[in-house]
Structure formats: C-alpha cells, structure tokens
Image (cartoon, rainbow, N blue to C red; front, side, top):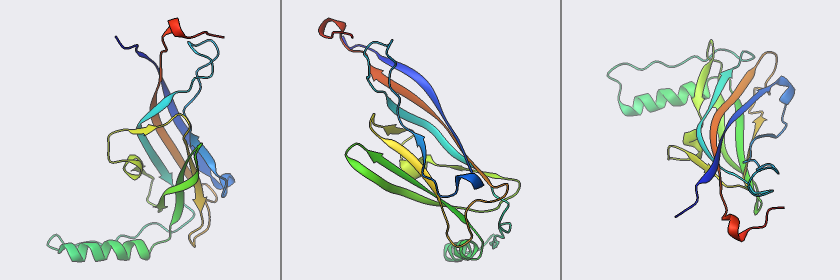
Length: 180
C-alpha cells in the first residue's frame, strides 16, 4: 500500500508596477514543510493549476486593431495581426525558470498593450501544453519587465500575476525514518 502525500494549496500573487523597474521578481518556488510536519526540511512539488496576468497599462497609447473583413483570407488576417502588433506601443514581461542544476533560462517574452479598461492573459500555455504545470522542488519561476522601445512600467501601470498551486510532498514510512 502506498502512503498518501501531504497536500496544501498556495496562491501566487504579485503586482508589478513602476517601482518594480527591471527587478527580477521571484513569482513561485515550492515551499518547505515546516519543522512540525512529518519530516523536517522536506520540500513540496508544485502543480500550477491556473496562472494569469491582469494587465492595466495606461502609460502608452491605447491599442488600435486593424479590423478584418468577415470574408478575409487567413493570409489577410495574419497580415492584419502583424500590422496591429508592429504599429502599436507595447511593454514586455519576460518569464524565467531556474533549478539547482541550471541558471535562469528565459521561457517567454510576453508583449503587453493598453487595452481599456484592462485585460487578462492566461500564462499556462507559455509554460506547458498540459492542464497543469508541474514544478520540481528545486525550481523557481521569476519575471522581469523589459524595455522594448516604449519604456518600463510607469505612472499607474500595473500587472498582476495571479495563480493557484497544489503542492504535494510524500509521506515517508515512519518505520524507516528517524524524525529530528
């Protein structure tokens, strides 16, 4: 019979704003079990079940979208999307990961626009094609604002990173462990 794990729910909640500048912000790292738990200093693994941005940027002009005709071809739609992207001011947030065996590695650059009143963007597709993103006990997810020609976040600009994680740590067979 296998032993069940110890589970807990954790929220990822960080606001990036003008004061963040280009600081590398640690968004998530699986936690440690506390000293009163089954085994001291054991670490959880994380299963990110939701992760999104709420984007409220007002320091650049509002996004102007090139509209498509209802009968437009796929090539025309793609070209209009490219024109929309290239002809609008944008900000950028970069996401990174590291483990105890690897330095920070960039996962994705995500470009952010002024869409009123604000908008949401799901981040899970940037990390995985699965429904959850599994995070090893020694992994760290971080983010950094990058200037892509329109400055950093300024004024009342805000980016909220919001997510939920189910963390699990195995329960060890007490007959073979000495708890200290």
